[in-house]
Length: 311
Image (cartoon, rainbow, N blue to C red; front, side, top):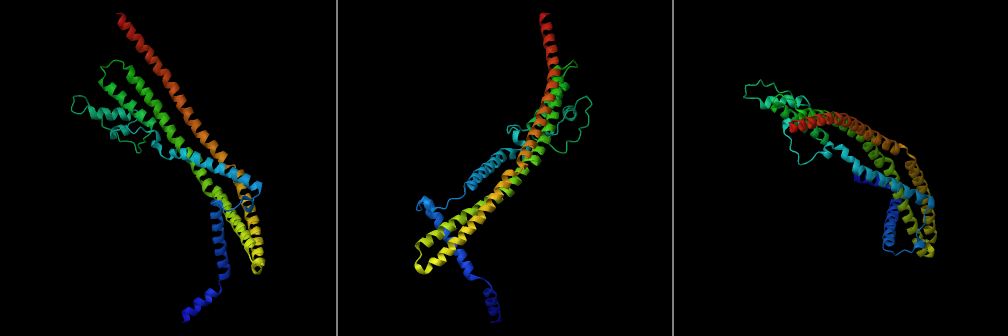
C-alpha cells in the first residue's frame, strides 16, 4: 500500500492534461498530413510559409544532395583496390615484388637445383597494396627479371625498358596511396561530418517547422468546426500554434543560413583537388621521364634490327 501511495504521489506531479494535449495535437497533425496528402484540404487552408524560408529550403536541399552525390563517388577512395582488376590472380611472390626485391626472389626460386648460385630470397614487404599502379609495377618487375635471367648475356633492351617502366610505376603507386589518404582525410570524412551534423540539424529543424505548421492548420480546422462552448479554447490553441510556428521557423532559418554560410565544404573540395593534382603531377613526371629513356632504347633496337636485316 505504501508503494502505491508513493507511485500515486509521483504521478500527481505530472501534468497529465498537458501530455494528453500534446498527444492530441500530434494526432491532429497526423490526420492533417494525411488529408493534405490525399488532396482533401484546399490550398487556401494550408498556411503559407515565408518565401525566405522556402528559398533557404531549396538551397539546403541542393547542398545536401551535393554532399550525397559527391560522397557516393569519393567514398571509393576508402578502399584502395577500386582500380585493381578482378581478373588478376597474383601469387604471394608477385604481391611481394618491388624492383630489386622481385629480381632477387625470382632468381632464388628459379635457380634451385641448377649449377648456378641462387641468392637467398629476401623478406616480403609488410603491406601488399592491391592497386592498378602496384600491379603494373609488379608485373613489369617480374617480366624484367625473367628476361634478365634467361638472356644470353647480351644487352636486353626490353628488360631494361621494363625495369625503367616498373620504377616509374613504383613512384606512381606510392603517390596513389598518399592521394587516397589525403582525399579520405581532407574531403570524405569532413563532408560526412558536415552532412551528419550541421546539415542534419537543419533538416531536423525543418521537420519541426513542418509538424508545427500541420498542428496550426489542424487547430484552425478545429476552431472552424468548434461549437460556441469550445470557441475560446480553440482560438487560444490557434494562437499558441501560430506562436510556435513563428518561433520554429525563425530557428530553422537561422540554422539553414549557418549551413549555407559554412566555408568548410569549399575548403574540403580544395583539398580533394590538391590531392588529385599532386598525384597526377607525380604520374606525369614519372611517365615523361621513363618514356624518354624507353624511346631511346626503342630507336636503338629498331636501328640494330634494320642494320642486321640489311646484312
